[in-house]
Image (tube, helix red, strand yellow):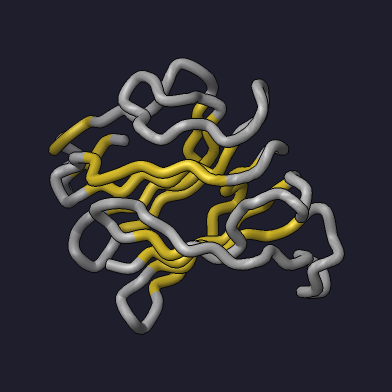
Length: 153
């Protein structure tokens, strides 16, 4: 990620990732001047990625990276099941309570322990999880389910 000023001069340049395939699908600027990066990761704890892969070899997990205003990583977190999970088309919304709501897609089974709703603190990335729902009708019958994450500030 590169941050430029209004004249196109680079203010900072940062790279994030491990030793396998990691990808960014979306980012958003936060009210505190920081950034939230979202995508997927097939890497375990390696490189400058500190959160382990939760899936099986060759699959991706949801991956969030929280940056401060100077581009320094505050935390990163992966979550998902044994299938491929990622923020393929990352949806980010700011919540009234100062939290952040995120949406993505999962190909992991519903029976697996994985979040549909997640609350993570910006400094620790700790979480609370709820049951996933079908992306088509909001019931809990589908194998492929959307994910929503809430990150409190």
